[in-house]
Image 1 (tube, rainbow, N blue to C red):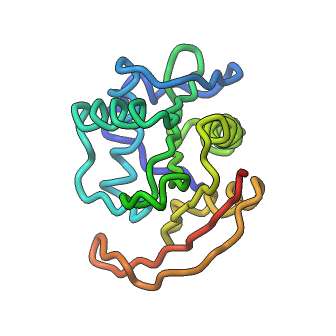
Image 2 (image 1 turned 135 degrees about the vertical axis):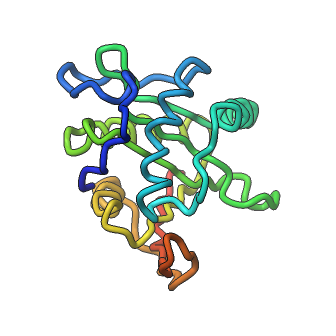
Amino acid sequence: MPPLPSPAEPSPSTASTVAAPPIVRAAVVGDLPAVAAILEPYVTGTAVTFDEQAPDVAAWRQRLVDLDARGLPFLVAEVDGAVVGYAYAAPWRPKAAYRYTVEDTIYLAPAAQGRGVGSLLMTALLEACTRAGVRQVVAVVADDPAAAGSLPLHRRFGFEVAGVLRDVGVKHGRSVSTTLLQRTLA
């Protein structure tokens, strides 16, 4: 994934360089300001996410509570006490027949890109999904230069392209397509 422009004033949680080996662990409420700060430049400067407004910490808290109640993983990667990336698995669709299928989400701070943090998060996320009884993991990757690392990451972990949805989103004044990838766990 190419580096994103740095926010005007980087927060301490995302400004550090990646030096020590990352630790992947379950997210806690105290991580959510860093999680919000990681996503914000993707929302404002790219079409990687179709969010048009960055979720605030309260929205992240609700997501954490919801995923926890469903038994689904929400993980962070931490280096020297700073959160440098996160990953979670959320329900793919709301209908009951989809209950064993999730969509994965992984985002990294610019300093963590290209350093193996995404692979560590993906490994831990897939293991946690397996423990949670998930059978299928779907990834939705936007056709945006900032998402260039996402397709190779998913392919390295056995995801296969399931299709392309053309021009399904409009962000920053342009139509954006998405590639759907899928991996079977069980």
